[in-house]
Length: 380
Image (cartoon, rainbow, N blue to C red):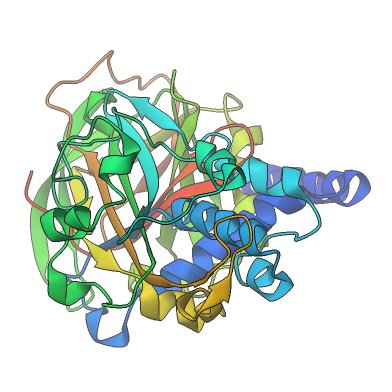
C-alpha cells in the first residue's frame, strides 16, 4: 500500500511540474554537479575503499564569473549557464557565502601577478568570500595564511605559501580555489546501533551507526532507495542514496541525471511527516584533500578558460586560468544522541549497510551543494 502511495504521489508531482514548469536553474546546476563529479572520478580510483567528494557549485560560480567577464557563449554552455541572463548567474552565487560554525563554503580567484583590475572586476568578485574572514583553519592546504586584505593574495607570494610550485602552471594569470566544509557532527541522532557494513568484494566490517527518526523521509525508486534528513537551522538537507543492486556508489552516480535526483528529492519532501520513517547510517567522514580539477573541467567543455582569453571586465590583456583547485570535507560522527527511539508503529527503514552516495542540497529547492561517494566509512 505504501509503495502505491509513493507511486501515486510521484505521478501527481510530475504532472504538477509539467504544468508549472520545472525550475531550470536547479536542474542546470544539478546537471553540472553530477557531470563534474563523474568526470572528476578517474577510472583507476574506483575501488571499494576509495571515497570521493566534491562541491561543484563553488567551481560553477567561479566559472560564471569568468563567463560573464568574457561574454563567451560557449563558456557559458560549458558551465551550464544561460549567457543572456545575469540574474541566472547571480543565483549560483546566492546561498554560497556561508560561514556558520561547522559549515563553510568559500571561493576565491587568485592572480600570480598584479593586474590592472577594472572596477567591473571588483563588482564581480563581490560574489566571492574575499575578506579577512576568508580563512578556514580546517583546510590549511587551501588557506595557509590568514589575510587582512585581498590584495595580499594577488601577489606571487600566495602561490609560494599555499600551493606547491610544481602543481601550479607557470604561465597562469589566474588560479581558482575553493573549499567546502560540512561538519554535521552537531546533528544528534535519536540513538545508536551496531551495523555490519558489507563491501562489494564480500568483506564485512562492524560499524557504529546512527539512527534517525525525526525530520526523516524514506522512499523507494526504480534503481535506488533514498532518504532525506532535514538539518534544522541550516537551510540544508542531507540526501542518502543506496543502489538497489550491489554496486559501487560512484558507478551508481554515473547513471543518475539531474531530473531523477530532482524528482526523488521532491517526492521525499512530500513524504515527510506522512508516516514514521527510520534511517540507519554508519558514522563516516569524507576528505578530498586538495584536488586539481583541470582535467575534469576540460572534459566537460570548459577548456577555453585554460587558453589565452579576453576578459574585458578584468583587463585589456588576454589572460588564462592556470589551475582550478578544490578541497572538500564532510563529517557525520556525533558523540551524543538526542531524544529517543520510538517503536509505536512499523517504520519504513533505510539501512545504509553497503556503499552509498550522499548529497547536501538546499532544503527549499533540492539544488545539489555537495556530492560524495561512500565506498568505505572511515574509522569512527
